[in-house]
Length: 77
Image 1 (cartoon, rainbow, N blue to C red):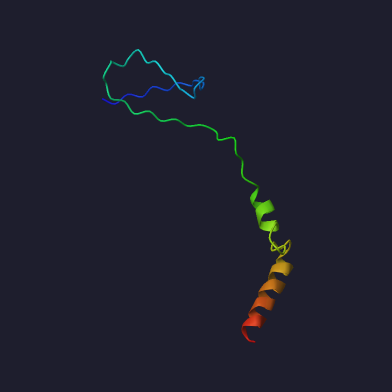
Image 2: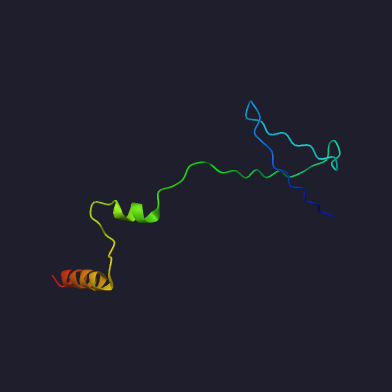
């Protein structure tokens, strides 16, 4: 039967993580998963979308309609 054991620990000097689980036996095969916060946060999506060579986000439905109308008109040229 598969068992799970969760523990939270700190990274030690030398960038090492050590865990001890009394239920395990020497030589036993285990799976270890390490999850961590990278500390790197991406830019907010609105900032990315607004940072292009031209501001591409529309604030109102009317702005969207006008943009689509201009695009459609350019297709006929």
